[in-house]
Length: 570
Ligand SMILES: NC(=O)C1=CN([C@@H]2O[C@H](COP(=O)(O)OP(=O)(O)OC[C@H]3O[C@@H](n4cnc5c(N)ncnc54)[C@H](O)[C@@H]3O)[C@@H](O)[C@H]2O)C=CC1
Ligand SMILES: CC(=O)C(=O)O
Ligand SMILES: [Mg+2]
Image (cartoon, rainbow, N blue to C red; front, side):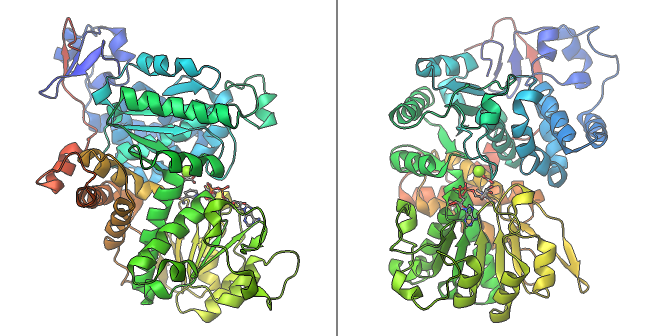
């Protein structure tokens, strides 16, 4: 935030010392042709803009037309990114009015393509770029960004190693931090109080290392002690500079994701979105499945296909909910069958990750199961255990085949199938196929967006089980309560809030609220998160009227009045 250039005064006006083209070049100040006559006069804009003054509504119409005239989805992504860099309020206004259509462009799936093309499509920087080769430069980088400590609520950081399901994209990962923050703001988080960060520790993608235009650090990924020290330096610096900030970790490879979370979750206000955000939104979908299937949670049998960051994160939260539903932890663990590359995870397998171990099945249990190769494959597990819920977090597009799905549907009234891998081409199944193969019985939620499916005169709305539906509300609630830590009960409260907004009684209804309702969902989630933070004793702020406190904290994309001053206050 350019504190020396502009500042929000207490009456909500934006005061600036900038004049003329510097105003137009600043995305926070710039209103384009919506600057009125007085502002043009006072800010030195006369002659720098065409004479007509348009309303923001007219600007939105024009921007939407321009968006629609782009040739392809990447072109639309480039258009919206440029708008964001040019006129922030207008960008968020257009986005909020066309959320269903534009979310897939600035977020999954198209953000994945933009990340892959980052160095070639590069136009201008956005956010903070931290290099492992210059750990001493971390503080300078944030100082250069120019935000005062109390003015930052939220930082999203990635090291770009596990972007969605597409892997290591090095410095291009900054676009996932930016995309996540745009989702936060579409839901009501103030965009001036956040920072997107890339922790550039190198890349192991030779294609990038051999690309003369690649603009990240051109060496392999740094691992081990130097990596851990770099992460710690980052955490120490941001917690010193911005003591009340929530740290969001995104798209780290599974080992680092877990290690970072375990190191910091009990010390600072932080969460890993892929582990905990995904767990929370998937639990919300599962709670809706419980309602729709009328089978109590503790009686479900769950297969997790792809037992990595997201898969085990989901298993943990659904397991904890089963414990709340009356099971002992061990009994609840036994409701899960995790299948990974080596097949069904068994307790006698070597090389299991620590976090996978509690979900590994006893080897003795499968002695009589048929094996076609070394491991026990997904189809065999489905045949043996008759799952009620099948979750895909494997990055294996099409893994839920017709045989597997039909076998599942044969033994279960309402098979719940959640192909969650992103982007779209990596989805373990296509909802249209799932509806057809199960004769409309399947309860479905996907990671990337899919349109509704009409089958036998019923239209099935496909819920998007994406952490985007829950992390904005989690963040908002954490910020409003100024929570010192993010506790498990805050995530559970978020899941329950989302599930309570689903009406599953109509046939074809989705198991999750609509993405267009992101703002409403986020406000409801935030309220429950604040309550949970207060109950747990981690809230530094305990508003009397929580609903109003959440409303007051929500940012709206409207132009502020801009005041020309000669000296901005610090
Ligand atoms: N819908 C949502 O909100 C979210 C979706 N995801 C998606 O989930 C997928 C996985 O992401 P992460 O968990 O972060 O990655 P990860 O790499 O930690 O986990 C993927 C797991 O799948 C396993 N796997 C790979 N090939 C397999 C195969 N042929 N058979 C069985 N298992 C196989 C891997 O060994 C690994 O354990 C990605 O596509 C990502 O986009 C991730 C986070 C949130
Ligand atoms: C949605 C998300 O966080 C992922 O696919 O990684
Ligand atoms: Mg992610």
